[in-house]
Length: 346
Image 1 (spheres, rainbow, N blue to C red):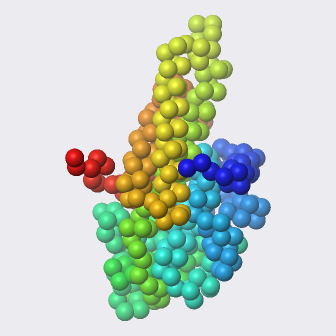
Image 2 (image 1 turned 135 degrees about the horizontal axis):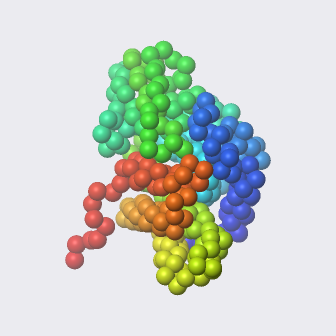
């Protein structure tokens, strides 16, 4: 897939906003913020670019351009390690609502999501991960514990159960939210407990389809992070002097950076193939699985090289390299990964 000129312009605009307002300082401010991200940056992205409205159909107050554009924004956010409610709310939760196909709920919830004034959180995983549900439905109430919830402070909670998707008001009785410690401090995860909490059934959800969207979204984020690590390494190699010359002039390091470039660009090809296929309904499960696995392996490899070629400074709090290292390990586990080999039997 080659992105269109309009899609490239969107990515360029988002990158320009993030370069000016979503730099390392903004990411670090979000670490200790009440919601776990820089709220002013999210407001700016929604008001000036409309990122939350991209994948929401026009009939529900959105822009309606599609999933590809939303995931291009996720890719750009991956370069900055900022974690506003784009992945969890504007992508995964919105897609879950659209898959459930409840027009009344969509008309009521999605216009405010598109404006950036309402956030959603998808409560999915059980204690062992995303292959099981942590919450069960009991009539018009839900009980249980959802683990690893993105944007857990959201206004509206969407709960996945074996009976389908349920809507829960974030202020309803019987909800307990607990922020959990994670390896990656740039992305806040929450455990949410429900105790006979009132819930509104929204309908069944195509779970394999939602899982594929989640994998493609995480792969897009990993691609952005890997590209940023490559860019940081190349720039550092031009300024770091050893034995009287920039380290980037040494042939051995040139070869390593060339390998990093190949990993990034091969990942881009697979990720763009997967997200375009999901957007137009032509994606094969193997395409999404391949993108997920390739992006995970590429980011781990690229960020490891970034840390090594930056030397001791890369593991200090002042440098961002260690944050990318932690993000790589965190995203490798997020939403699970394909468990079967990609190779087909002969």
